Amino acid sequence: MATLPQHHPLKGNPAPAQGFATRAVHAGEKPDFREGATGDVAAPIHLATTYARQKVAQPGRYEYVRSQNPTREALEAKLASLENARYGLAFSSGMAAETTALLALLKAGDHVIAFDDLYGGTKRLFEQGFANFGVETSYVDATNASLVEKAVKPSSKMVWVESPTNPLMKLADIRAIAEIARKHGLILVVDNTFLSPYFQKPLDLGADVVVHSITKYLGGHSDVLGGALLVNSEQLYERLQFHQNSSGAVLPPFDSYLTLRGIKTLAVRMEQHQKNALAVAQFLEKHPKVSRVLYPGLESHPQHELAKAQASGFGGMLSFDVKGAGADAETFLERLRVFTLAESLGGVESLIEQPAQMTHVSLEKAEREKIGITDTLIRVSVGIEEVADLIADLKQALEW
Ligand code: P1T
Image (cartoon, rainbow, N blue to C red; front, side, top):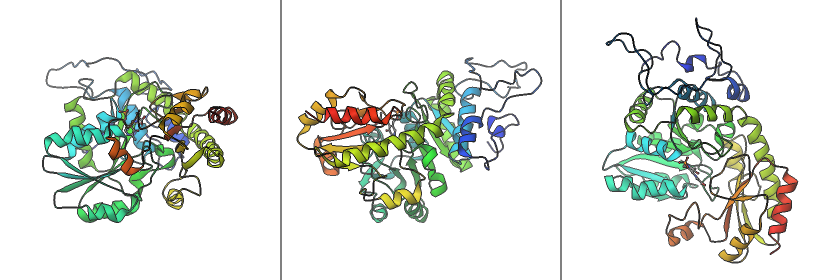
């Protein structure tokens, strides 16, 4: 697609000069004042699966929902605006977005260099999915950018990082890794789920593709499963869009609408998530039953300076270890009353989990332990409740 059609929602994006919170509210949802249009202030949900044409040989702008849908396009435009991207694509889950990126950009014999700490499902996709089709993945501690370069071989095609990582809150120096990727002709993919575009914009730091699980902060209310890919390169966009349509893992219209609605409050939610997370991290750091706290906003985080240099905030995610054994972590988790014991993250409510038995159970125990996912590690998605209630709940649960 060389040029966007006249009435494509990207045409309605406010000028990039407008601030993030303004774009979160308005981008992609410009009221339509054309003849016969309603001027909806919120993009309407278009549920039709197919679009009529008057002439056989003359399709309209829309043909079939898997290929195009106005509600999804409004969301794609909003997402693109927020990530400072030229193009956005929305998928039926974060995993569907990842699968499509890999399908579109790799072939048998290609090699991927990935962060050794990643969402368990992403590692599972590489190891139990793409490995079967001849895509090989090496895992490195990408907190040290030179280890990424050391892992490059002639078949290398892609570098895949999260920053911060799930669940160990490690950071990749995105600028430094982008330089390495450029030097070796590799595509740099950054999963920006944990910080959201409110706090970090990987494309501005040199990444080629941004991945999101929409299910998390973008949706924001734990009621949408979705994913997204954002790019600046038209060539990458065309390949990804081709596979979005051919694999069919598109975000449905209703979920696109819910995500558009959720994103409107992203800026205010992220501020509150961060404020609460910092207070929770500081409380935990002083608690005698806690042995370590991993939050990039703490001065004790080994990459605190990098966090400040490449992002405008530290987000709402943190992890910590309780002293004792795995059973103590379970006791603590089961005593909580305000925090909800559940997988996922990024919703308005505080969620808490034990990666070893929940989000990262698909990794072998030895593999988990090698990178530091202990049985006593607890991951927290700090919500936007009254922070005093959150701290009181943690305090009582730590008194087992
Ligand atoms: O769940 P889904 O929308 O398919 O997104 C997958 C995904 C991708 N990237 C990151 C960084 C993620 O954290 C996830 C999903 N993570 C969880 C469900 C979790 O509890 O960590």
